[in-house]
Image 1 (cartoon, rainbow, N blue to C red):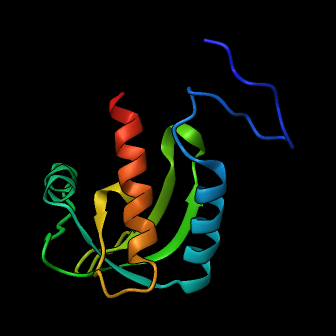
Image 2 (image 1 turned 180 degrees about the vertical axis):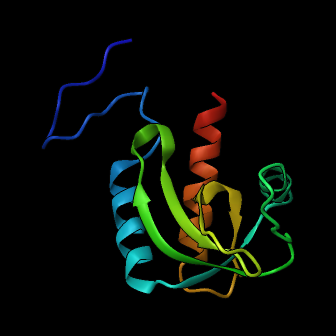
Length: 120
């Protein structure tokens, strides 16, 4: 696969999962609105349970930090889950948000874009 030429220090091409501009904008807005409430997906709750971390999919957890783990990892969130001593780091694609939150639409668009490109 051949990548398009570099433009302004960004790598472009079909091999890239995240839209760099969309990701940078969302990450900056996320970091500016922390802490942010979120819920884990049932799949993430089940995976965390295998690590002895209790995470009820209906309970609200709190995102206290957000960082970019490169194109492979995407936006990662430090999640504090009630009744657990340790925070966990999870992909934003494994979290659900109240649709009334100001960033909910942007987050959902990022999640859909990322999941779609991961499946290809």
